[in-house]
Image (tube, rainbow, N blue to C red; front, side, top):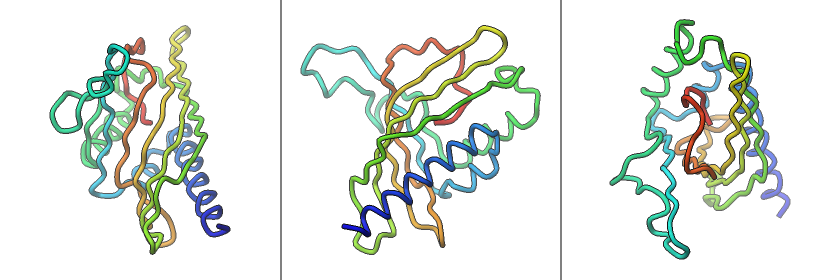
Length: 172
């Protein structure tokens, strides 16, 4: 039991450090947390009738998604932002990631891979009047990578189904 609690604390600290990298625009350090074979996926959400859980989210391999990216695409997005001439990030956004409710859903017997769930709130402000608040949950598959962890898979589920934000240039 104690080992599982310590592992949960370690995973939560990993998520908090990741949030700090993103908030401080330390994108190269954030990219270093991603496994080379990462799948970074955010399905779209639909308004459906009560009980129609099968159609609430777009399907992983068959339907469109807000994001369905690998490390190469994520790296290119970071490099675009780092040029300083990214129209959607001029002026740059001020972002705060809040991560909570970290739960370990499964752990391999050797503790080399963990499936974790967490909740997030992202606050973004840019220019003078643009403010966005996005809320949702993440399901992450983490792999032990030497002394630390890497994100092998991230599924992002927004609680909103209509996005009022002008763009999605930030990361979850």
